[in-house]
Image (tube, rainbow, N blue to C red; front, side, top):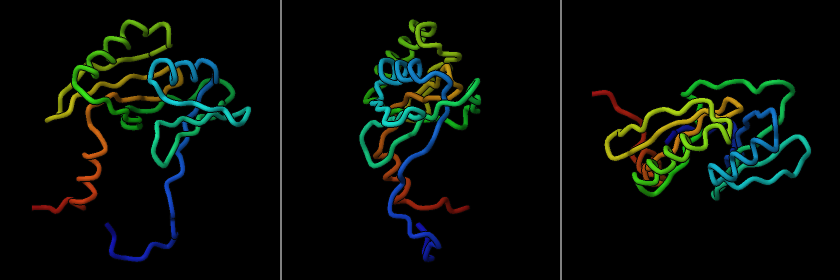
Length: 147
């Protein structure tokens, strides 16, 4: 947490943005594979949401959407390690159906289990057991302090 007064009095984190090149295919992947809620209130954009105070706006672009690096990814939490494994298997089985370009192996990092996939629009998604409690703890602990 910062001890100084911010220059912008931000009240909430509204949304972020990703690109797609085919709204219908992207919506099918997001809803039917990832289980994300999608609504299209505008002809050029659809909103992604899975509860909580913020959303992601998916904007349709001409041509191919830009491929993101793996470091630019969205995390989707599941309850158990078995659910990560099931999602990984589903990604492999349905890869062609949903245009999934790449699937990483499942990895364990301490108590968390996860894998990533690259969708047809060049966006990376991580399915993980890491949950909101992890982020709550991070912000309670504050910044890393060098030894």
